[in-house]
Image (cartoon, rainbow, N blue to C red; front, side, top):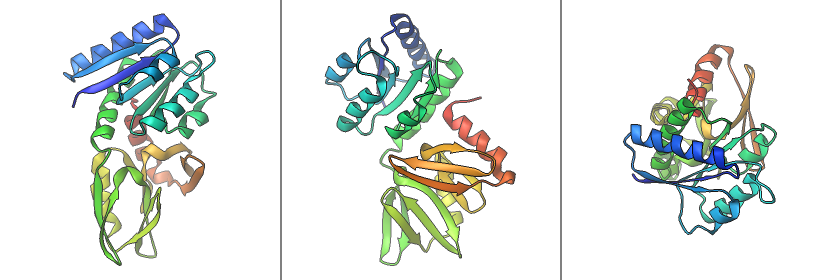
Length: 238
């Protein structure tokens, strides 16, 4: 696929450095794409291009990155927003607008490389579905809509953005499929979580969130290290 990428930052020095680094990563990975830069949110919003990935600074004068992202998502809900900022204060606000990543400046090359890999997987799987068996027969579920899957009383349950679905399929059969996608992990035996909705976690508890809704889940100490490593790899860590 050919990526359409935009970067918006009112710091012209940072904007140039970020643009050059992204172009360098694309070239090294032999990924086709265009990188367009904007020094004001208003100019980005005026662009007629539907971007696949947008890198946004948070604090940019009258119209900040959070408000800009809200406007972008109304017109282009599949766009992946990556915030690059000097501040952690806006983290909750960023995830409230479905941020794909929230990174601290300066942009790290290794983190960016892994993040672009994850973004391409996310874009490729945007409309990917899995087929499960329910009482009425077979149904297709959009993978991106799945928050987590778990088994309780020998019944496999899929918690999605559209509600909870009971399926006759085994938990293992579903986990074997979604775990291969690279953005699901097991924080607890019999539970697998979509990393996209993970807001926070400790060695005992995990919180998933989407817009105003939150989901409190358990974390097993035995599973914690494996889950933590998988999640941070997905985020773009080492």
